[in-house]
Length: 159
Image (tube, rainbow, N blue to C red; front, side):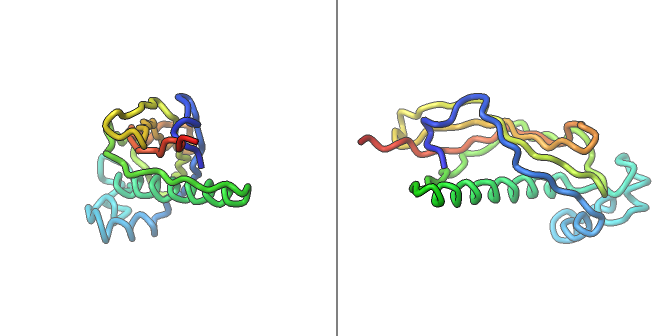
């Protein structure tokens, strides 16, 4: 996995795709967002969404799941090359979370992440700060979900 110094503005990666089935939408909604348009097809059809809609938090959780899977793949690839893997640091937060289009039952979102800013930190010289614009685009090419994330990345140790 990359050190802060290896990451450049414009670096882009596809995190993966996910299909939101009626069963998964309802299971998530029952536990975390039990609104009628997430739980019942008829209620969804009668809502402003026009169909059974995934919770926005479900969409965000899927993004996170695919991000962690991508990070784990990177770590395994580093180990296979004989490198010592690095880990991302914690995230100090995110901004501009937007649900642009409803995600309806049967929709497949493809998630990507593109580095939009890299910044050194005088207050934490062992870390750099990365900002990335993250998106989920549906099978029709429509932007459905986006946000800007921040994450700390370790700096390359001095040798």
